[in-house]
Length: 363
Image 1 (cartoon, rainbow, N blue to C red):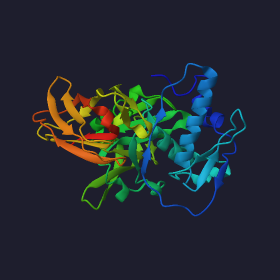
Image 2: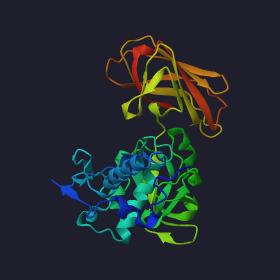
Image 3: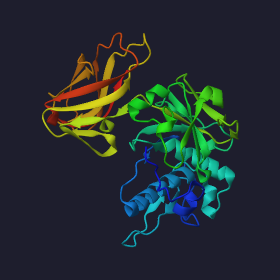
Image 4: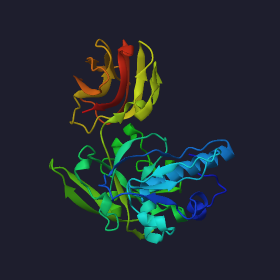
C-alpha cells in the first residue's frame, strides 16, 4: 500500500511539519459528556499530485488530530485556505487537551498516536467503531453503555507516530473487521500511513486486559498496557470494538445504485445490486437466520434478494413503505451449514421505490 504521507516527510518530524505551532485551539463552555463511539476514515491512500497530496493529507491529519486530542468544547484552527478562510476543526475524544498550550510530551504523544493509529483504515471507508481503554492515562475511554451496540473486539493499537512506530494486535473477533472494511488489526502489514504497522500478535498475549460488565451482561475487555515485539511496554493502548452492521454504501461493488452521504447507498435504477466481500457468517454451528436492512422506502413493492457468492439464494426481503423515515426491516434467510467469511450479493428489484439503504446485517 502507499504511505499516507510523502516520502520527503520523515516520521520523526511528521506532526511538527503538518500541525501549526502552537497548536491553536478555541475553547468555550463546560466540558461535555464523552462517548467512546466515533467514525474512522484516516486513509492510507495518497494522491498522485504532490501539492494537492500534501494539502489534502495535512487537512486530514489535522482533522483527526483535533478529534483525538481535543474535547468537544474545543476546536483547532486549520491553516487558511486559498481564499483566506480558516476552518475550525472540532474536538471530540479529549485524550490530550493539554496540547492546547503548545506542548505534547511523550505521554501526550502516545495517547494521540494510539487514537490516530486506531482510526487509520487502508480503504479510507468511514466506519463506526468504539474506542476503549482501561489505561489510567485514558479515563475518557472507559467502557460504558454507549458501547452496547459494539460487541466485537477487533484489536488494540499503540505506538508513537512522532517516532514512526505503530503496532496492532489481533482481538478475539478480528475476523469481523473485513466485512466492515477494517484491516489494520487483521492484516497489519497492509497498512502504512502515519507509520509502518507492525504486527504485535494476539492481544491476549501482547496486552494486559481489564474487563467491564455492561447492563446487558456482556463484557468489554480493553487493554491497560501492551508490549511490542521487542518487549517494550506501552502505557496508552486503545482497543477497538466493532458492530455487526455493515455500512451499506461501503459495498465492494454497486450497480444501479450510488454511494450517498453517511455511508448509505441510494438506488438509481429499477434494477440494482450491491456486492459485499468477506461477510462473516460466524463459526460452524452458529447459523445466521436473519437478514436486516435499515432503509427508507417511498413506496412499498420493492424487494431485496440475498444471494451467496456461489449463486445460492438465501432469502428475500419484501420492502415496506417507510416514507422519509429510516426503519429496520428483516427477513428470514436459510444459511444453514454456512460459516466463515463469504461474498454476498444484494439484488434489488423495483429499487427506485427505495430512497436509501444505510446498513445491512446478517444475524
